[in-house]
Every structure is written in structure tokens, then in C-alpha cells.
Amino acid sequence: MFKIGEALVGSGNEVAHVDLMIGEKEGVVGEAFANGLTQLSRGHTPLLSVIRPNLPAKPYTLVVPKVTVQGMEDAEKIFGPAQAAVAKAIADSVEDRLIPENKIEDWVVIVSVFIHPEAKDYRKIYQYNYGATKLALKRALLDYPNADKIKYDKDRAVHPIMGFKVPRLPRWNTPYLQIALDVPDISRVKNVIEQVPKSDKIILEAGTPLIKKYGAQVIKEIREVTKSDFVIADLKTLDVGQVEVDLAYDEGADAVVASGLAAPEVLDKFIYEAHRLGIYAVVDTMNVEEPVSLVKELKEAPDIVILHRCVDAEGRQQPRWHLIKELKKNNPKLMVAVAGGIDPHSAPKAIKEGADIVIVGRSITQSRDVEGSVRQFLDFMGGDIDLKRVHVE
Image 1 (cartoon, one colour):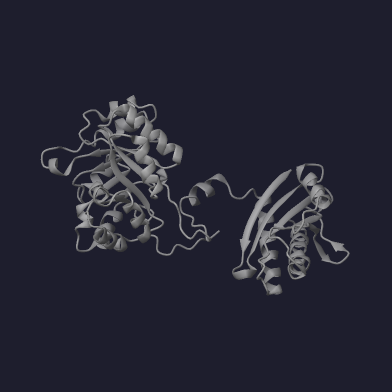
Image 2 (tube, helix red, strand yellow):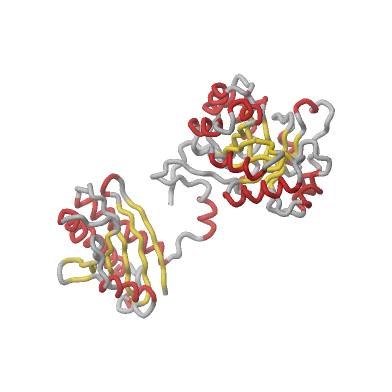
């Protein structure tokens, strides 16, 4: 048996972060345990957990300091409250039958503990490391987290030190509302963004007119207003696809758009480069006669295809939403967006036809009530307004 657990408990300098392994003495954990006791590292010397001197916890548990011990003050925190907390957590876990009593001679545990050099409060060090050790042990023995938990949280979570998330577009969260920021005025664009309610459903698009006026660096300016939103750079690339992907990526874009009118060789390099860098490749099929055939010709399908009526032709061109199902038929992972005169009346129809993303410009950016207009779309999209979501295990 070889199980792994992790837990973070507490706050401030006394915060506890525990990484834990538990397994058989005769297995890889036992081997690591023996190596830890015999191959010492300066500043990270492992020690057995003891409830008090001469009374170790069982299963035998090795405490490993993550932060380099610089002097006796640091050593006392490890050999005092941290060591005692880990030992008591292991002993209590046996008493609580989380660890079977008949396994205490067969298993060993390795616990890596984080003790901040500025931590002062021994009671908090003890409390937080006790709680973190018990939680990590429980998670290890229950094989936490399962795949569903990871899938659910990976696109929602914010790392506390990083302070913002880098979102993706999971298919289970469709449909999305993409706001086309086409106004070639960065001040107005920032004003619009500040009025948009926070939601996992929102995509922000740095529109082509905006990028033409300010260059790709306008993406970085958008990032100054919002760090956690998904941002698409609508370059409508026609040539040097690889180079333009790199430009958008370097400025912080999560996705980049090429024109479907580009040569297949350009689109293939464009998609390859986007996927190599880990961002979304989007192909806009405005004025492309056969979008389905275009996608079939490519070496690799893009992540998103846009069925787009241009602004100047909205009066005479009919939307091609009947192609949505056909595009997805051979590419089940493909997401399809619709654009061109989308408003609160037409958006539900597009979603009913299978659209994963509705792209809206003027109905939002030229509205006197930007927030109200966005909410009007989100209301029929199952809008997930994020009002200070609290992370609960």
C-alpha cells in the first residue's frame, strides 16, 4: 500500500501545510522512511514524531521540515509544537480507527511540515499542524480527491498565493457569453469591463478594431482591469499564423482567433502553435463558404469554430446555425460560437441549436446599463454569477 495526502490549515505565519505518505514498512514508503533516517540533509533533518520524549507515535512517523532550519529558534518549533502535533494526530487517528490498530506495526508514515520562520505562537503551530496532519491522513486513506472533484474545481479554483485564476472553458459549463470589445477606445473598454458582473460564463474578447488601434499589447491593458477572466485576442490571422499566436500569447491571451479565409497551411501552423503553448485556437468562418469542409481539411481541429455574419451584411445574410450540429458530428470536442447581431431575442435560439458560445458586441458595449444587459443574457444561460464564492471542502 502507498497512499498520499495533503492539507493546508490555519492562517498567518503559523499556517500549516502538510504533505503525507503512508504505506507498508516493506514497500516504497518504508524504504523512503529508512532513507530519511539515515541520509540526513543539512537544515532538513527528519525526526521521529513523539508524543513526549521516549514515547513515539505508531505507526512510526517521520517528520520532515520543508523550510530550511537556520538555527535553534527554528529547530525548537520543529522539535516542539510541530513534532508533538504530528505525533498526537497519528495517535488519535489510531484511536479513532482511521488507522486500523492491527496495522500500526506494519505501516509507516512520512509527514512533511511547513513552519514559517516568522511563526511565533506555539499553540497555533500545534493546532494547525495537528489539524493538517489528521486531514492529510484522512484524505490519503480515502484516496481524496477523486477525478470528479478535480474536474469540478480545476477551472474554478484560485491559488491563494497566486491570487487569481487562469480559466479554461470546460464543456460542462456551456453556454458561454463572449463580450466583443470592439470599441477602439481603451478607456471605454476598461469602463465596460468594470461594469461586467463576475461569472464563470464570461469571455472577454479584445476585438479586431481595438487591437488594430493599440496593437497586441492592449491585451495586457485589459489584464490590468481583470486578471481572472478568459481573454480572447481576435487577430483574424491570415498570414504567419505561428508568429501571431506568439504575439497574443506573450501579452497574456487565453485564446487567439484566425480567419478561416487563411490558407490551410497557415491555419495548421496557427493551431499547432496555440496547442503547443496551451492556449485555445479559434477559427472564424466569416465569408467561408463551407465551414464543415474547412475543418475537415485541417490536420488538427481548432478548439472553437465561429459561425459569423459580418456587421455590414447582417441585413441580408441568414445565420448558419444549422451547421452547428454538423460541425460537431465529426469533432465531439469542438465548441461552436455564433456571432453577428446577437441580441437577447436571438441568443436563446442559437443556444437551442447547440451553440456553445454566443458572441455579443453592441447589445452590451453600447448599453447604458452594461451590468443589466449582461445579466439579461446570463439569465437564460444558467448564469453562474460569482458573488464571493466561498471554497468549502
